[in-house]
Every structure is written in C-alpha cells, then in structure tokens.
Length: 195
Length: 85
Image 1: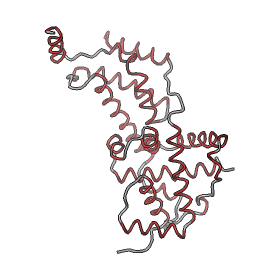
Image 2: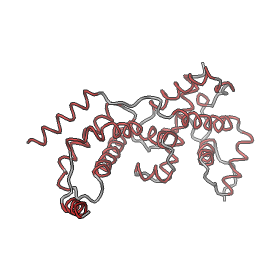
Image 3: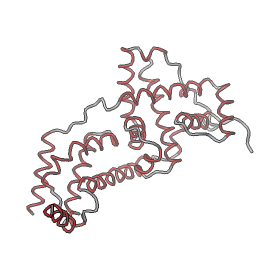
Image 4: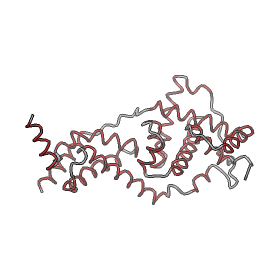
C-alpha cells in the first residue's frame, strides 16, 4: 500500500516519458487519427513523425499534468491545424470564389453545374459498391479542410461544436466548408458516377 | 425585411444546415420551402446531399490505415538517435 502511494508521489514529482515506446504504443493510432483528418498517407506520416520529434525536443516541458498519450496527442492536433493553415495560405481555403464554379452572380445554378437526376437504384448491391468507391475518390479530391469536415462529421460522427473546436474554425466557416464540400462531392459524382 | 425567397446558393446552404438538424430562423425556413417548391435543381441537391451523407456514414474507414513497418522502424531509430545525442 505505502509502496503504491510512494510511487505515485514520485511520478508526480518527476513525470516521466518513455520515448523508446512511443512508436510501439502510439504510432498506429496516431497515424489513423491523422489519416482521417488529412487523407494523405505521406502527409499523415510526416505529421506523426514531426509529433514524436517535436515532443522529444519539448520533453522538458512535460509536467505530467496530462498522460503521456494526451500530451503527445495535443502536439499532433496542433501539427494538423498548422498543416491546414499552411495549406490555407496557398489555396485560399475560405475565399468565396469557389462557389463561383457552381453559381452565377445572382446565385443561380450555372448551366453546367445544375444537379442531374440520379437513378433510384444506387442502393442495389452492385451499384452501391461502385457509388461508394467513387464517393471515396471524390472525397480525396477535396482540399484538406473539406476532407476534414466530411471525415469528422460522417466517419468520426462528431458534432459541429467539436469539429469547430478541433479545426479552430468558426461555426460559419464550418457551414461554408460543409456546403462547399457537398457541392464538390455532388458534382464529382455527377461527372464520374453518372455516365 | 427582404421577403424574397433565397437564391439557389443561399437555399442550398440553408438546406445543408437543416439536413444537419439545425433549426432555421422562421423566415429562412419559409424561404427555403418556397424556393424548393419551384426549383427542381435545389430539390435534387437536397435529396443527393442526403444520399451522400448516408453513404459517407456507411463508408466508415473501409481503407485500412496501416503503417508500413519500415516507416515505424525508421521512427524508432530516429528517436533512439536523438536520445543518445
């Protein structure tokens, strides 16, 4: 009994990290986490690797206020947000131009963007497999934040508040991104699934 | 107050919010309904957006997100090197 108490005290005073076990303990989970957010194997790997290396450098700042896992996870989340930000600078993610591909200046559908009728049989077994495959490919074509909102909403089933917090965006950013993602996905399915 | 029904761009955005169970302000709700009455493209958008949502939820992570063991070995080596420095 007293042994356990002593250990706990020691742990509190000297929070320890065990970097040698990080890869074994966390790499797979962190990679999966990053993949659902950036959808790119190479980028996800880089983010996880960066997380481990930055964590090593910052090891002195680890005070043991959270578990080793949560501490590393917080670093990974920051890396992911930085990644979106950098991408945003290049691709100007939240510019309004994007909707211009779909709507004219009065806000009406452009002729070549008008939604086409979809067959009712998309849910029949053969057709559904094809539909999902194309949808997956279309999701991959979205930009980083677009993919992130779709994946977090539908695959991880998070609510709007959680998604905004995780991606550091406002609620109105969220709706713009979600709306735009749906416009792109729908049009991508029109082009690639309806032949 | 502008009581004209929203344009397609605004209507699809409102529809997206409603699809995700957000209660729209009363006049937006009315505007969206009126718009959908006469705009078949937006009706299609709404229907198809719902299909996309259902399909995406079903998709889960059907890709296996597994790491290459060689990558992991490389990371372990990099960490050890840093620790030995």
